[in-house]
Length: 337
Image 1 (cartoon, rainbow, N blue to C red):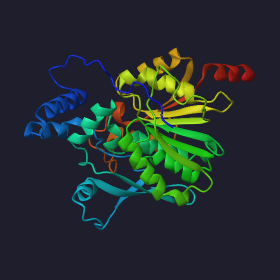
Image 2 (image 1 turned 90 degrees about the vertical axis):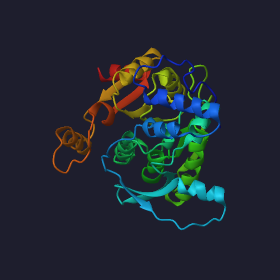
Image 3 (image 1 turned 90 degrees about the horizontal axis):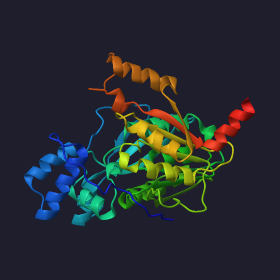
Image 4 (image 1 turned 180 degrees about the vertical axis):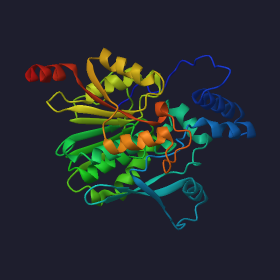
């Protein structure tokens, strides 16, 4: 299934004296398209484009899997050099190991920015595994009862760690992993296939999905749980994301969207206002898990053993957003009263 809609900001803002990462992406893409070849200046700017985190919470252990070369095709060899297979050990009971194919930290290149323009999408899902995705994964597998026998959809899945972890650890009835970037969806499908034996009776699939304020994301389909990590960064997407959550989220008791996002200045607050404007109720939790909170405080105080250079709470610590339809939460409050 595929839904179309607006997925990337059309209006370019005036660049400041210090270009933002977003401005550099578009400047780089324009120079590359006009010249039709990479230049040294563009390659130097490329290193500034993606804001990779300087550390991890390390609640999900990750290690690379060494692979032997299996192809003589030069194009496939080039692709393989851009990728790594990573083994993620999920702290469930018992431990579950997911194997995900993803890009190396240096695996993003100019072609990805061309594809962003071609498909009118963002490419952050290819950059790395963001801290919010790690935290959301840990939170979800620590609470399998939230997903047992539920239909779950992940928005902006990236390589699929959280959604696949839920499928492997919670006995959900269905997990649908989505992303607006068709190249990311290709990676998700590979990762579903590689881990299929872990999913038991859970139906797991993926598709391309663009958020839109102009039409229902998947007409006629509703889910018990919607999850998303670090999807509120671009303010141009806020209303589209809010409408998509509203159209996908079921209205039965217990249906909720679970989002993990850093504040990133005023970005999160703007999304909350967008969600409320479409009659969604949003609750924000800062202290939602004791282990995560203790790690966070250690990074803030720069305690010995807490190794995260230049840890910035505003950009690195994900807050938990619990979202429901307003009428559903109002009815629940009335019953409580």
